[in-house]
Length: 212
Image (cartoon, rainbow, N blue to C red):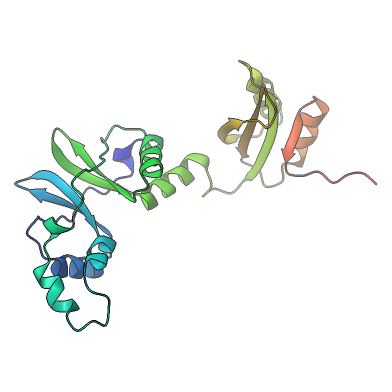
């Protein structure tokens, strides 16, 4: 899944000369938290509703309204902007947001702003990738970290006529091991669990009740 599959294409922008008061009104009316700042069609900064609120006197201050109308976006905006390209993988956008602790990425192609992607967009995309929105069950198991280790698992699941919706992997808790997380198109994974355990695989989830 790519950034272009998840981004918002109709982007509400402001200019460096937009007042903080006007930008906050736009934020409330359109329920938008981030604004790319454009000057002559070129991306020159980004600003959030929090940036605007923090730069003004606190709520309840009689001078707040006047201050917001005097304050310009150019006085508050962040000029170093991390961007994404429409063809970037969605996981790269997630990584950049996490590493830089930012809530959105303007999407730029050919020097022009073509969209924006937010942390909420990324979260929805990742949920689609792992199949979290579909009925099913979760299976977690430990594998030896070597080529072809997953093939045996997939073969057992195939023989049970069960579809694998998604596969994720993470470093295992032990050296040389991987933790695999599979989402299966079945509500009760017990038949799969039993077959995998019979074949010698270690199941981490769902937890199995010990026999009395």
